[in-house]
Length: 198
Image (cartoon, rainbow, N blue to C red):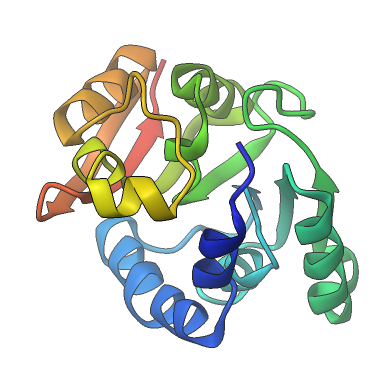
């Protein structure tokens, strides 16, 4: 599901970029540490802030990234062109990732899966494209936030079959991930670092 106008404005501005760099990335780094080089994938790259963070903060050698919205792909390509072949961006769907099995050393989700109606298929695809022992760095928004009347009015999210902290973590484990660390804030936002173990 593509973001509506309000959420695009909230997600694509300097304040959000600073928050992503100074709080979200640091939290995920503290939970899971840096990559040992290798290739990373970002699902739902927006205008490219996350891909740049993965390359510079998480020590990836190369970052592949995609977004469902062609306008965001265009903005990300323009923003990240100075990185050359270190970053590859395309238009894509997290429930049908155009990548081979066991391809990535790490996958990053900076708050995308809660936009996906079939979020279980998104997790299955992420698991499929990760190498054995590859790491999934994830931050997500929970049902309590999504169904709140104010946010329900302003933002466009699927309303059925949403997840909370416990449900999301259980599904990660059921899919074949082993938890490295997980925590939440106010029952509305969560951070997860897990590894593909089966």
